[in-house]
Image 1: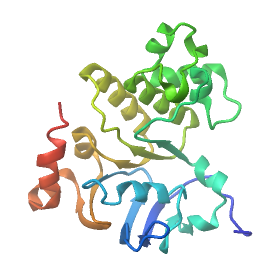
Image 2: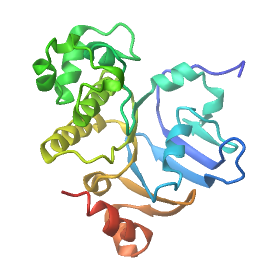
Image 3: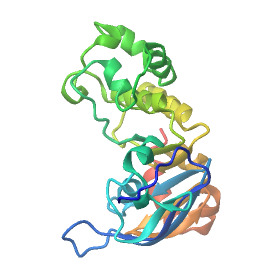
Image 4: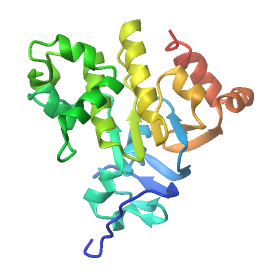
Amino acid sequence: CENAKEIERFEESILFDKVSFSYDGSNDSVLNNVNLEIRKGDVVAIVGESGAGKSTMADLIPRFYDVLHGAVRLDGIDVRDIQLDPLRKLMGIVPQETFLFNDTIRNNIAYGTEGVEDESIREAAIAANALEFIQEQPHGFDTIVGDRGVKLSGGQRQRISVARALIKNPPILILDEATSALDSEAERKVQEAIDRLMKDRTVFVIAHRLSTVVNADRIVVLREGSIVEEGTHDELLQKNGEYKQLYEMQFKANSG
C-alpha cells in the first residue's frame, strides 16, 4: 500500500472486525465473521479443537496473511494500511515450534532486534530461565545450536524463543503454547519464563495449559472458525457448554 502508515506505539486495542478468511484456492472458510476486541493490557486466551482457526487468527495480526472480508484493526487502523516493519516491531511472537538458526545462542536470542548489547542478551537469558543451561554449553553464548536448534532440548529451545521475545520488549505478545510434553522441571522453567514475558503486555495466546486459561482476563472459544463462547474461566464453566467440555477433555489433562 503506497500510503501505508508508520506507527510507533500501541495505545488502545486490537480489533477483529467482521473477519472472514480462507486459504488460497479453498472454498472452505477458516474464519467466519469473527468479532473480537483485545484491549491494551488484556490477556486473551483462544481455545478450541484442532482446526478451529486459532492459529489463523494469530497469523492475521502481524499480517502473515491478509483477511478476505472485514478487517483487523490496531488502534482503529486497518493493519493492511500499516507498513509491515513498524507493525511487526510492536509484536513478539513465540510460536509452538521455535525456529532456531544454525548459529550461536547469542545470535539466536538477538535475531530480529538490531544493535543488541551483550548485557541485554544476558539479562534476557536470565529472565527466560536460560542462563544456567547456556553456561553449561561448551562455549556458553557462543555455542552453535545446530540446524533448527537440534543440539538443544525442546524446553531449552522454548526458553531461547522467550529470551528472543524479551529482548525485543514488544507491547503485544502473540503466544502459541507448545503442546509437546516436557518433564515437570523443564515445564516449570518454561512456564515461569513465559509468565515473566507476559507481564505488563497485551497477550493473544493460543492456550493449551490449564494455568493460562485460568489466569486469562478473557477466554474465547472457537469452533469451525466462529466464536461460540466468551468469558472468564469461572463464567464459562458455569455455562456448562463448549468450554466446559474442552476443559474436562484437554486442560485438566495438561494440569500436571
